[in-house]
Image (cartoon, one colour):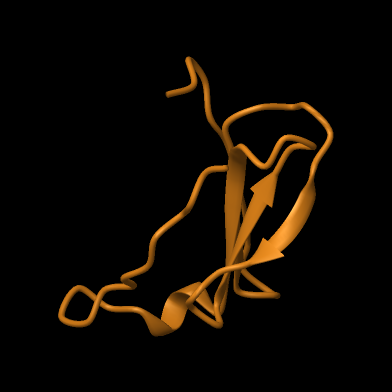
Length: 69
């Protein structure tokens, strides 16, 4: 796990992004349509983003997996 996390939330776009590392990477689809993984060149997960984050509630949380290479 990373020593530090960077978290961004854009209320207007209803978008949350969490990064475990500042290394270069790209977005990759997950098994959930609202979640994208951010992976490095070796396929290691270095973050994730959630679109439409406000639609998830305590009663019905988001449930997905981030898969490493």
